[in-house]
Length: 233
Image (cartoon, rainbow, N blue to C red; front, side, top):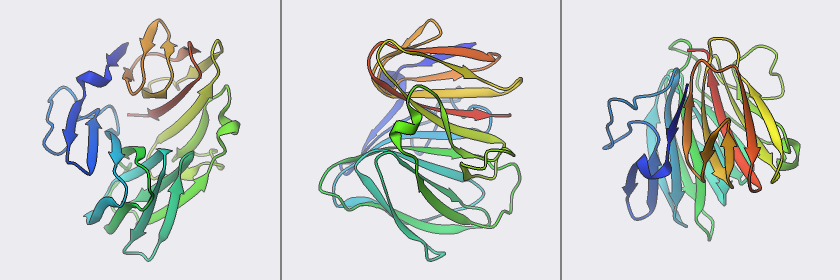
């Protein structure tokens, strides 16, 4: 089963400094049919204006992955971590028992990113933060695991959830495969380009919720970038 979530159908909010699209219920957007997908709870598509951002605020018991599409985001938290994550890079924050953080666009251009929240497999983990560059060329023509809580995914940033975040860049005319473990669900968002997910065409920033599918083909009709989440529940 593949449920198409066109970009126009998402929850949209314009706060001036922040333009956001919500794949799932979030803040003032509520849709009882879009409360999450497995352990995936939030997928926000954010555009953050220059010299603005999210002031310090708390989280707990959530795995928060930020995938920067363009520009950069600067992080600061109550653990003393500071860092700048730029386009093509990923940061992970495990909120655990509690953390306060801020995320700012200190650049001269708009920053675009996906903010992905995954529920941990249990409450009470120690909070942590980390970032790592994953060269875009390493994702050519196949899905690369960027963040994972699955044993064996040693090259990925660690999250405290039985889930994976993957990404791929696909050249026009190429086809790659996406294999889901038996019983797992998936959610895909096209960052750019145009693809066919199986027989379903996806346009930029469309989402697709997948269940009871173990092998999917992804064919690029233009040079494309796709991000996916896989969860065991």
